Length: 160
Image (cartoon, rainbow, N blue to C red; front, side, top):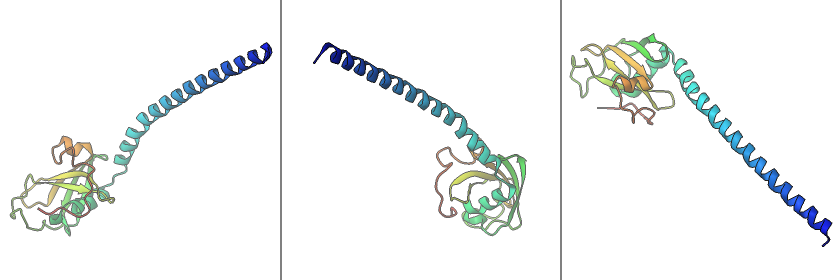
């Protein structure tokens, strides 16, 4: 091998190492950029999802979470957009574990169309026909549901 061949091999090795180093830096920067974008997009998507929750969505989610509330025909109105709702039942809840007239302060989960707990409601009166409902982390903050229950799979309305 001539001196020129050795010089060519050394230049080739140095260039290859330099290109690899630049590629690693570029990948790290791209990864850091992607992680930063996710940090912005994911909470934004969660907020957007809450904003898309309508009065009708909450009305449907109330009996989906609790057997006693099935067939009660709730109607809800927004108190705070995507977070808090005031709901009235056309019919009193079924009796079961709770005695008639003992509903005041009772808490029940709400379940979204994908069968996941998305919040919860607290009865505002003894006959259980007036509820204050909270969606997402607000339901946890209001101590209607526990933090580990939010997002849990709930294939059928709870009973008892």
